[in-house]
Amino acid sequence: INVEGIPFRFQNAIVCGLAYMLSVKLPNAIDRVPMLKAQYDEAWQLAADEDREKAPLRFVPRMITYR
Image (cartoon, rainbow, N blue to C red; front, side, top):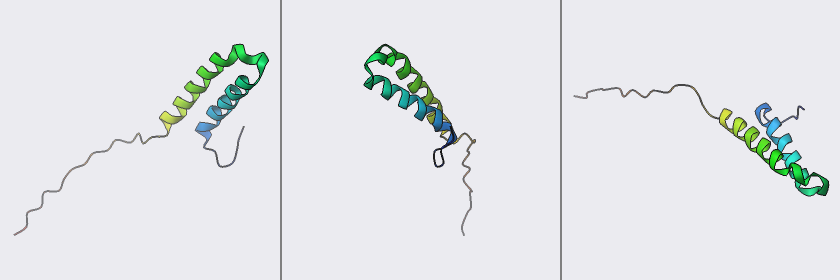
């Protein structure tokens, strides 16, 4: 799946979330709800963890004396 405007890392999470929501609505899929919920939570957490800055950051103050 490749949907314009949705970041690639969230596409799997959205598909898993849709499967979970459909399983809640369909009476013959009620036994799959816990498994699909777990897959959705895992996919969402993976996508959310990738949505952060991983570069090392170091602040060094400049010590300037004024006369």
